[in-house]
Amino acid sequence: MAMTEVDVVVVGAGFAGLAAARDLVAARRSVAVVEARDRVGGRVRNESIGPDKVVEVGGQWVGPTQDHVLALAKDLGVETFPTYDTGARVLHFGGKRGTYKGTIPRINPLVIADVGRAQARLESLAKKVPLDAPWTAARAEAWDAVTFETWLRRNTLTKAGRLLLALGVEAVFACEPGDVSLLHVLFYAHSAGSFQMAIDTGGGAQQDRFVGGSQLLCDKMAEALGPEVVALEAPVRRIDVTGDVTTVVSDNGTWRCRRVIVSVPPMLAGRIDYQPLLPPWRSQLTQRTPMGSVIKCNAIYDEPFWRAEGLSGQATGDGAGARVVFDNSPPDGSPGILLGFLEGDEARRLGRAGPDVRRQAVLDSFVRYFGKRAAHPVDFVELDWQAEPWSGGCYGTLFGPNVWTRYGHALREPVGPVHWAGTETASVWSGYMDGAVASGRRAAAEVLATLG
Image 1: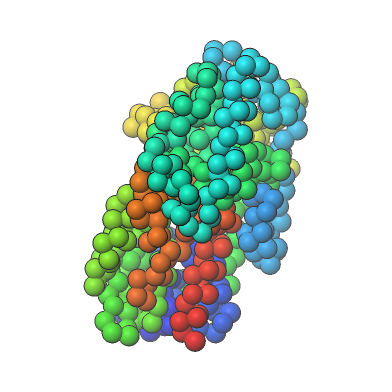
Image 2: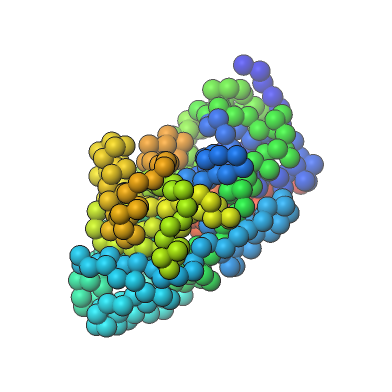
C-alpha cells in the first residue's frame, strides 16, 4: 500500500474528526482523514425515502446553546426547522392512556410532586460538578461510587416516580439507571445546562432538526476537504510512534505524520494497536467505557394522521416496544413518520429477537399511543446501533461507577503525539453533535499549538 506523508492524521470522519480537519486545513496544514465506514458522518446517518427526502436513523436534533454545531450549520448553508410540537402528547403509563399539553402529564399529583422533588435535587447537585474535571467535585468519590438507580431508590417515594425518571435516563443515555454512576448523570445534566434541557423539545435538546438531515453537514465538510483528504473504508489497525515520526496503518493505506487525532469513541480507540503501548491508565479507561444500547425505528405513513387528531406525535410509555416517540416527518409533513426508540434493556431484548418481531413490537406500541391506523405503515426503516461495528452502540459512552474518579483524567490528555477528540471528550453538550464539533476544534487547536 502507498505511503502518504501529511502533518496530521485524523482517525474518524464524524462531526469531531471532520471539524478538526477543517480547522487544520484552514491553518494550512496537510491532513488525512481516515474512516472505517464507506461513508462519513459517524453516528449520524441519512436514509433516502424518496426524491429529495431523507429520514435520519442516527443523531438528528439540535437545540438552544448548542452554538458550535449551529455556527457550523450556518457556515455550511444548512438550515434548521422546528421539531413538530403542536398538539397534545400521549402518556401510556400503568396500563392507562392519557393526553396532555405542556411538560407535565395528568397523573397522580403525588407522583408529579415526587418526580419534581427528585429532579430539583438532581439539578442542584449537577451544578456542583466541574465540567472540565468532574472527578474533582467535592463529593465526586461518593457520587461515583453509586449507580443512578441506587440514588433514585433513595430519593423517590413512589414506584411510579422512579419509573418516570428511569424513562428520562433511557431517553438521554440509551441505558438503564443501573448502567451509569450518579456522577456521570450529574455531569451530563450540567453539561447540557440541566437535565430538563436534555429531555425537553421546545427550548431543549430536541427543539430543532436540520433540513436535509444531520449527515448533510458531514457530507458538506467532507466535500470541501476533498477525496484526496478523506479516505473511506480504511479502518485504522495500528499507530506506531518512532521518534518524531508517527505511522498510521489502515486496511486501505498507510500515512506518516507528526500528530494524530483519534476521534472515535474510547472503546473503539482502545482496539487500535499502539506502539509503544498506551499508558495503563488510558488503556484501562477504554476497557471501562461501553456504549449505550439503542435501535432507532421509523414507521412511514402516507400522511401524519395524528396531527389531524390534535396530537403532536410525541409519546412516552412504560410498556413493551418504543417508550419514547416523536413525529419525525420531513419539513413539509409528507410523508408522515413516527420515530420510536428502543433503548437500554428493551433494545438488548429486541435486538436479539430479529427484525420481524422487533417491527411488530414497535408498531404495537404505536397503536397503544395513536390508535389502529399506526399498525399499517407503508414502510419501516430501522438501524440497530448495537450491531454497528464502527460505533459499538449509541448515543454515547457510558461511565459506570468509579470510572470518572479513577480514569477521567485520561479522557482528553494526549499521549505523546496522539490526541483525543469525540463528543465524549467535550465538557459542554457532551454526547451531542455540538460536543463533537467542539471536541474536534479543541483537539485541532492542541495540535496546531504543538506544530507551531
